[in-house]
Image 1 (cartoon, rainbow, N blue to C red):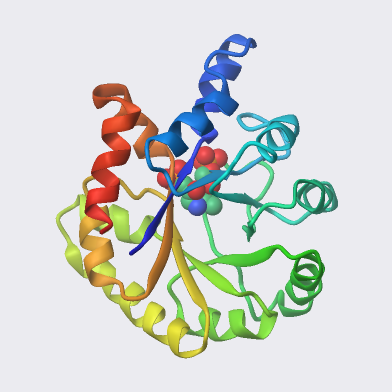
Image 2: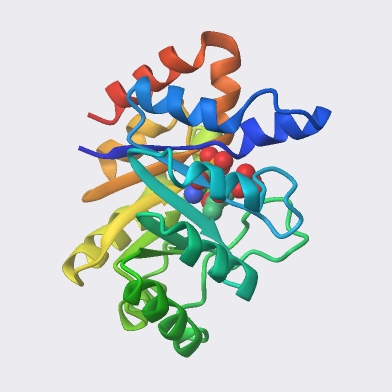
Length: 237
Ligand SMILES: CC(=O)[C@@H](O)[C@H](O)COP(=O)(O)O
Ligand SMILES: NCC(=O)COP(=O)(O)O
């Protein structure tokens, strides 16, 4: 079974639009868990445009499933993660001004840096995952960093799938098989949705977990959060 971790960034985006506390991200996380969500993902960005550092501190004691914090491991982020002690940290090489995550790590060029950061998280009992493009060389490089998992960056698959081109899944199949052979766990995320998740899941082996936010929160506007989560869980069985 592939676990569903719900990314709640967009709930914070809505809250921040008015500056108050509606919707409340802590209450939303509790509801998501009560609806069957198997994890909560947040991606605090340096400008705190959605999830704030304080949100991470508030969520940390209340998340009962798997708490996953994503971000670029700059000093401020590392300190926050060490304080929050989530089950998993996902390292993403996103630039400060990027509108959203737009590339995976070059695991070869950044090997020493990643080894150092990953070791620090491991010493603190936090599972590490690194965001990578579906490129075999980057998967081989990921093993060298000491990360326990990779998160396959699924935007390229999602873009092709939306155009009716199902071949976009091929590199993901190959990379997931290789990653599994090399002993890595496999997560995936970015632009996954009710439209494409079933095809991805059925075609990519050894998928431990997907984190889904943007589409899931948008879909919930039409059919409600509970029903949306139910549908994902059914498609991920
Ligand atoms: C790491 C990743 O894939 C991103 O999808 C991310 O977590 C979403 O971030 P935004 O909500 O800021 O677009
Ligand atoms: N790691 C990917 C994630 O958490 C959610 O990405 P998206 O569904 O908001 O594109």
